[in-house]
View 1 (cartoon, rainbow, N blue to C red):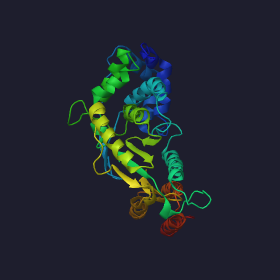
View 2 (view 1 turned 180 degrees about the vertical axis):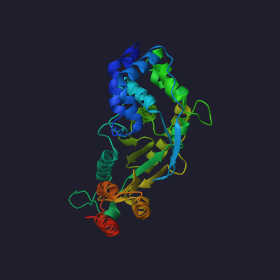
View 3 (view 1 turned 90 degrees about the vertical axis):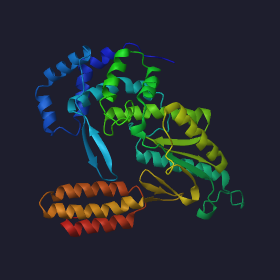
View 4 (view 1 turned 30 degrees about the vertical axis):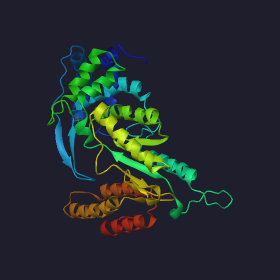
Amino acid sequence: MKTYRNIYPQLCSYENLELAFRKARKKKTTKQYVIDFESNLEENLTELKHELETFTYAPSPLTTFTVRDPKTRRISASHFRDRIVHHALCNIIAPIFEKRFIYDSFANQKGKGTHSAIKRFEKFMRKVVSNVTNCGMGGGNCVLGRNIQGYVLKADIKHYFDSINHEVLLEIIRTKIIDPRIIWLIKQIISNHKTRISGKGMPLGNLTSQFFANVYLNELDYFVKHTLKAKYYLRYVDDFVILHTDKAVLERWQHEIDTFLRNNLKVDLHPDKSRIVPLKNGITLLGFRVFYKYRLLKKSNARRIWKRLDKFKQKHKAGNIEKEKISQSLDGWLAYAGFANTYNLRMKVASAFAEAFNTSK
């Protein structure tokens, strides 16, 4: 296995830091902190370069806040200067690890979003169903809902980001990167997040957290694909599914996966969110309810748009939001919902927004 011993100078180069700055400021060019940093860009990047080279760099405390849409989560945002360092690090080490990622790892990678994951799941579902479902009339496959056979293990990891073990993560990284200076910087970043249990957890909201989350569970991917030899498996962050014709096989794999996660990665399957269900019942996956021949929005996602409409009415009445912002939000939701079979719902929502705000939708 190829390892990398002297890559820290690449990370500290002015060219890499400048590229990292460009990435960090993407879609944030009007933010005052970006404007302030860019107003003296060369000096600021040179200072950051010096701190990294002399090992005097120390990240600023994280800013933590709570978001409640779609669910309550605590987000920890890094200082803009630290975000540049995160991009600089990922510029160098992400290509090293992403070469090892399996094809069916979908989160936080270019061209590997939720829609791609759902389409891949549907392809798997068609293959599994075609393997076990036969009408008996000329050998043709039967795809009527009542005759669909096969099962899916849908699982996720309990409190995943809070449970990631720093030492396990560093051990995984050291299998590819032997440069102690890179390891020093990673320690600086992951230890900046203060958690209830020392040595565990990463903050939601950081680029490095998203990347390390994939590196960590790539170990699970290899176990499932190469040890269990599961053919129809995909993962999106800590949500993963395995499809099979035999429920007993999935039950055995679920037990073996749970044991692997506990022993090797020091995390647990979520006891309430890990279960095996018949494919004919459909499956809730990444915000959608996926059936053999169609997709629906998850019910809670459909309800949320009406709550958002009420909030927009209140904000607009108080003069706190413009129609243009409301229209942009509606456009985004309509595009999102359009991935499912939601024509009637989208027409109702568009009509309700148009009536409320005199828009052209």
